[in-house]
Image 1 (cartoon, helix red, strand yellow):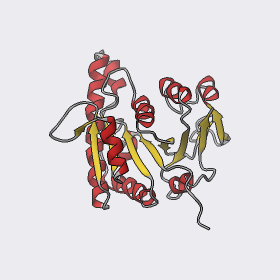
Image 2: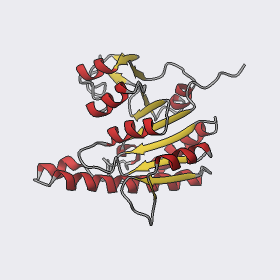
Image 3: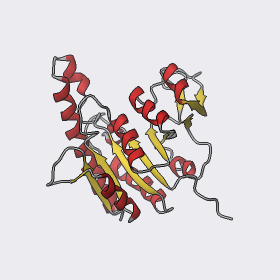
Image 4: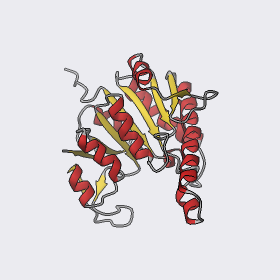
Length: 239
């Protein structure tokens, strides 16, 4: 008997770095195609997929702040950068045959629909992949917080944070070969240990609404698919 899916609707949170070129900056079409292929694999299983993407490959607000830039201005620049990433991802996905819609929390009618919750849900019901750009539309909130907020608004069953490592560790596994990976954590453990899964506002939102967070390695070709079947992949953060 074929195993049933553990999740039917997901929100996938990607960092901007997921799209970056080998130089660590910009948009690499090959990276976009790789992500599109992974999304296509799980979309074909019958999973509703919404995506929130960051902007770290194009703009790091911290660099501006360190030079005295106004915080709101830096954040708005980041929101616009997420839209560039969203359009690049949309193009790659449509070349894989995925019907995709981009919605923006910052109005820009020439390139994207405005974010409207009920319209986003309707797109998902029709089998479209929805990319949600522009963060929350407000400065002082990260794309992690945007991902948590949108996940709850669209009725996602899990927020999947895609990273370059296979879960959450007690220290940086790139620097410490003895770092220990957690299979499960509670929201409070994540915040108390300052494990930097997501920022505290995002984790608090998930905790208050009992939305699981799953951290996995998107560059493991099977990780996302296995996670949707409930296999013990990555680190699951729950109550």
